[in-house]
Length: 89
Image (cartoon, rainbow, N blue to C red; front, side, top):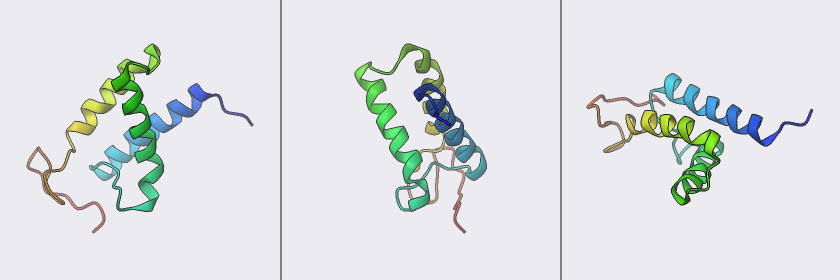
């Protein structure tokens, strides 16, 4: 079965949201299982910054960025919300 680019983008978008909701953290570059999501986010963030992200994806991606911002780390275990979490313990 061949998956269109749009379907693949939606799948990765949903996987990223699921990851954040499940782990209460962003994917980590220190964990190989997280690499695909990190690369997907990095690629789409670059397109978004250059204004090249397709218009039908911009709103959804902005929501994802807002959601991800809540889990931006100050250090290894503390997030902006002040909540301390270690998803791998």
